[in-house]
Length: 179
Image (cartoon, rainbow, N blue to C red; front, side):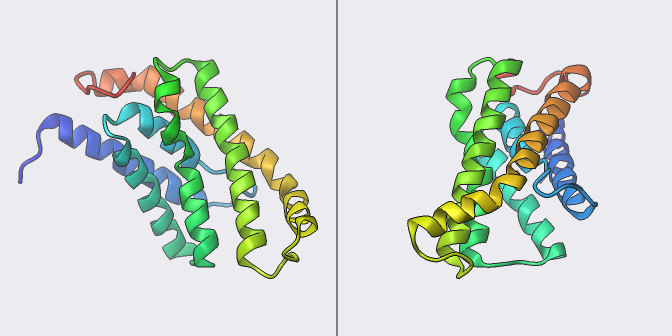
């Protein structure tokens, strides 16, 4: 099978996004300061099919977890699913602008915080199976929330900024979903 230039460009972008996610997970960084949600958001806009963006993020997470280690299946699946939240925002984004992209980055971070801390409460014995235990899980996760939000907003700005500056020159013939 031979790829045309558009397919090669799309594949190159997918590989670059996967590499970004994996390398960012392997290098020292503040907890939860990661590009995966921003990659899902960028992919949601860049790729004409949402599942391509989802595949990029899930593959990046699997490769990263292969290096750093897998963990509780319930929590891991919740993390993976939570990172795909931006894909649901495709219609809201319309023609993306900084305000909409920032809103999705922040809301996805809050959604990630809510779902993953609930998963830790539900799938582990770390907290009692009560509302007080769930509340304790959310309180324990608060220090990570700020890094999640900062990572989402920062990486979203970098990805969309880089595409705005370089992407249209590198891939002018790509028909993206919204950009």
